[in-house]
Length: 181
Image (tube, helix red, strand yellow):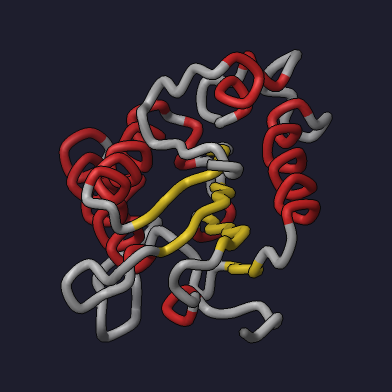
């Protein structure tokens, strides 16, 4: 097992990772709840298909943090690749109809895509112990309360996070597995 950070497609299966993916240009695309729901819908699909397990998450205005485990391929691609592809397609579809001027901002000059919403090479850090997993879980849950963001007063009040699940057992989006289960 490598302890080095890996690229998205190189995450090992059946091993927990702290994963961060960021919107291009650090834009606050995810400040809009519609785009947050696209992220949630993709995670719901991947968990329902038993392709991933999610132990923690937060959706911030310009990035996401997940603590998750890849369980198996989604056809020929990794669940992480399926996640970014699906969400990007849905972002594009929504912007074509509702904000075509904003869509132009995500135009890509790369030959393999017309648009790019997520930055290349998301961060994937393998979590080698329960203590490290808890440290990362605390970090993502506290993220919305940080002075830079100031999105909520207390961690369990932020809708777009797993903090409420760990505080009161409520999984609003039905995507979570307790890391001790």
